[in-house]
Length: 149
Image (cartoon, rainbow, N blue to C red):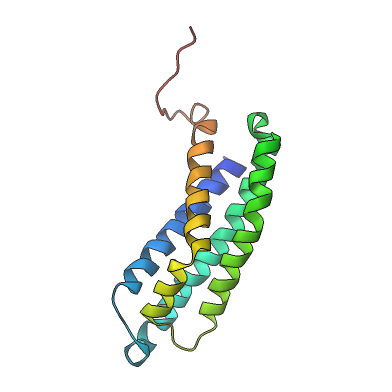
């Protein structure tokens, strides 16, 4: 079974969500510069996963209209175009965080507090819900069958 833009999008969102949840958990631990060295490499892996998930998710979301005509619309195209600068801003912040010799809970908490992270994460969740039904009937899943009247 080959991957499609919708499955790639779903996979990227799952990757982002896992990394995001870990980072939020770390932010709540209150770990400062003195106590963080041992966990910095692990934190950096989740930062990298989040950043790569954003890149893959954006590419997949942009490719969805190539496979699903019902999203080949001006509104969808504009939504994706407006999402790109936010994705790049979030990826840049993640790269900057990942470059630090020690990553603290406060740094992660401050990054999470940036409106761009709230916006980009919610927009990917929106895209997930928007595209969720597109391949469900083809793979045997059901999100609630719709009867023709």
